[in-house]
Length: 256
Image (cartoon, rainbow, N blue to C red):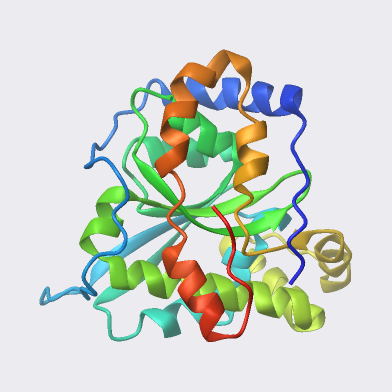
C-alpha cells in the first residue's frame, strides 16, 4: 500500500479554510465529551429500531472510497448485526459538508483537509476524530467521526473503518471494478453520467491510502489559525481501530 502523502499548499488551504469557516460560524454545534473515545466497549446498538449513521461525503474523486464502498455494499456488509443502518448524505462542495458536520447533521464524513481544520477552528464545530485516511495528494481526504457517535457506537465505527479499508483495497487493486462502482453510484446519487473510462483516468491519478497523513495536516495549519487548531491536534487522530484492521489483513499499521 503506498503511503506517500503530498503536503497541501499552505496558501490554498488557508483560502479554503477561510471560506469554510465563514460558513460554519453561523451553524449550531453539537457538543460532546473531550478526549479520545477509543478504545471503548464493543457496544452494538441494543435499541429496538436501527440507529442511523449519517455518513457525509463530497461526490468527487478524492472521496471515491465513499461511493465505491456504498455501491459494493462494503459498509452495509460490515455494519450487519451492529444495529446501525448507514444513511448516505452526499454533497457537491466541501463547504456544504463542513457546515452540516459543524451543525450536528452528520455522524461521520469523508472530509478534506480544509473541512477538518475549519471544524477545529470553529467555535461551533463538532468534536471529531480522524479514523482513517482515504486519499492523498493535492486534495487529500480522511474519514472522520464525531466523538459523540464514537463514544456511543464504537463497534459500528470499527465496521465503517473496515468498509473504508476494503474500498481502498478495491481502488488500488481492481481499477476497472472500482471505476464501474464509482460511476454507477455517482449516477445513482446525482444523476450525473460519467464514462467509466474518464473516471478510471482520474482514479489512476489519485493516491488512495488508509494513512491519514497526520504530518501533512499539521503542516497545512495556517498561521492565522494556529492558536485555535494546534491544541486540538494531539487528540485528533484515533487510529487504533484502523491499525487493528490493517494488522488483521497483514498490512503495516500507520502512525498518528
